[in-house]
Amino acid sequence: MIDKIIFNVIQVIVVMAFAPLIKGISTRLKENVQSKRGPSIFQPYRDIWKLFHKDEIVSEHSSWIFRFTPFVVFVTPIFVALLIPVLTSYPLVFAFMGDMLGGGFILALGGFFATLAAIDTGNPYGPMGASRTRMVGFLAEPVFMIVFFTVSFIAGSTIPYIVQKHWVTPLANFFQPSHILMLLAFLMLIIAESGRIPVDNPTGHFELAMIDESKGLEYSGSGAALMKWGGSMKFFVLCCIFLNVLVAPWGLAQGTQYWEVLLAIPLILIKIIIFVLVLVAIESSLAKLRLFRITEFLGAAFATSVAAMITDLFLM
Amino acid sequence: MSGQDLLLSFLTKVNALAGGVFLLCAFGLVGIRQMLTCLRIYVFQSLLLAISAVILGYYHASIHLFVVAALTIITKVFIIPWVLRQAVGYESYAKREISQVINIPASLLIAVAITIFSYYIASPLLTATGAGVFEKINLPVGMASLLIGAYTVTVRGEAVPQLLGILAMENGAFFAGISIAPNLPLIAELAAAFYVLITVLVIGLLAMRIHKMIAKTAVGEMMALREE
Image (cartoon, rainbow over all chains, first blue to last red; front, side):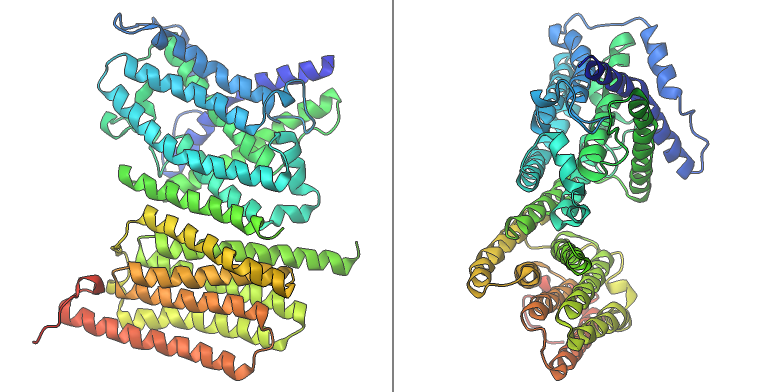
């Protein structure tokens, strides 16, 4: 029991410690693809460190929501990290407190508060970005629903620890058409949710074209640091759900020895780096879509997820 | 589980995967704007048809299905793109965005509805005939691809994508056909392959003539007859 609590704490620490690193690696790789040298992979750590030592300025016209939001954005991915398999393949203390749907709700709570805070200050760009994020969000919602239906339908559960076992026992399950199609749909979702090309350009600095970034424009000092850190942790957690639960449940600690759990840390990092390579390839080979073409992108994701569901539904 | 059973279950899964991606390609033909990408998707769909034919041929120990696979690869993967490139000309299908009567998200939803409809029709047939695992995948997916191809023909406003819609219908018919009639005579296969080729040639030449006359192939805009 004590062991499991310690493992849970290690999981949270891993998520907190390595999330900025993944962000740094992805930025560096993208710049390398464009034949630039790019910032160091440790740059996000330095940014966060610098921001924590700067003064924070809060508009006097803003309400408590604006001050409260960075903490919500920072804490929600940590809660999700308690629920999902980051390092171990067996359930830990909080595993049965919530399923994947619960994790989705918790992450959505952070997004909800970020949207409210963007509207709160009255900055003209904030509400614009917020409403665009909501647009992408509500288009992505049905895909999420169908993917979860499919998962629960195939694996008989939405608890991530049970789902991940289903894909590899026996291995032929991995090649189920619904599994592969669902992976495609979920990949499109991750691209949309984490604001990447072709949906959004995370490195853009032009406010009118921003979707996701403009929500945090008003933050400074430690608030901005928490928002940045929370954002990169959200991406890390999404990667963990995608890789550990849906794609490749290999490399997780099977036993309860400490060395096994510690060995799982480099393995999950390697997996995420490979996934980041794929994302970089996607981002570097596609152009950003116009705002009203995003419906087509997510419509394709929806069609894919529905195809995943019905190819399985009638096979039974 | 013996080796034979394991192989069979693996083949079933691969066939099912080919079916799923086949369906996805049919969606792609409705939902993608670029003509060249549409053509590539069609080629990929034909490859999946060939894979499914090889698997079914192995399962039924039927030489005809291997012939189907070989014909599919030769005609649809190599000759048809080449013929289209020759007959229609590069400028009339490459890097062009296709106009549609109904916009793409709505078209995709209609395609989803068509797929559910074809599953709805196919499932009583399958249960009534006591079909095996291969028919359960191939018949509804092929039917869906056939209907989605027909929908593509109605909704696209350009000659070449409409042709691709017709070809997708043919692909769908074959995909369903190889599972329910594994031993169709060789002459039928050869005839089908040549019909497809000739269809492509005729429509391609027609599209080229239209392109020469009025410098576009947007058949959706051609509403009235004109005398030169």
